[in-house]
Image (cartoon, rainbow, N blue to C red; front, side, top):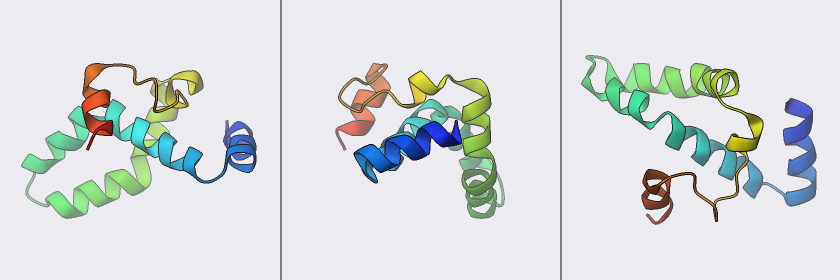
Length: 84
């Protein structure tokens, strides 16, 4: 997977990384929002975003879904996220 992401980065530029992160955040939105209710919210959220988000997304979702262009959101929630 890392090779494919690097290839896309070299061909399409840095915006491909932005697309990948946006897609991951949209797909894991429910879990990220659940972290808001915890006592140490900032620390846990920061740790999750830095350490677990990418690994969970690569384990749970196909690369094709993760790399779907922003112009083709997979559902209405992502469309609303992208319109911000």
